[in-house]
Image (cartoon, rainbow, N blue to C red; front, side, top):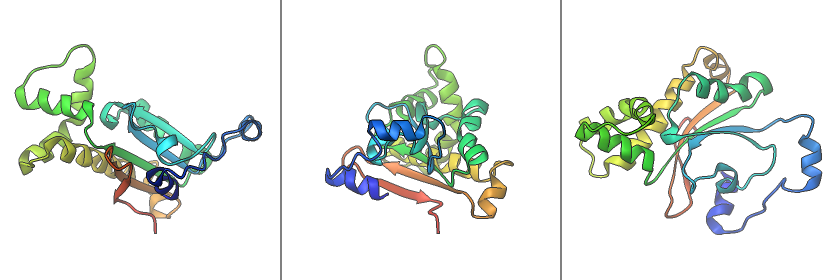
Length: 189
């Protein structure tokens, strides 16, 4: 979060981004966090948290849609390297969430493999549709981050680490307007 504060202020340190760091991590990595974020080009976790090479495991899917391969990718850091933090990062004006919301609301399927994203985002849609939020797509992006974080906290492989406080699973929301990341749930103690 300190890195995000630097991003918001425009006071970037851009740590661990030089040839010396490349040599340090060339043979072994020990990231301090794993981030599941959207594919959106405006939301690169390494930049908005002002981190560098070897600092984060990053998995990106449309609207943080999750399935077995994505779950395995997110599990990788905590289960193999002892990574103590997972952040599920939703964001403002998410195109994938907006497309899924519209598809579900209007009953119009999307082309190609995009229906798989719609299906993955349906629980968040149902949560928001029943609440009748005025800012439905942003509410859905927040709901998606929280639902996925909750799923990861109760994941059979990760739950024991969470219970022992060896792992924190945080849901968060990124504002495109301000650059700030807001923790929604799971803040480490």
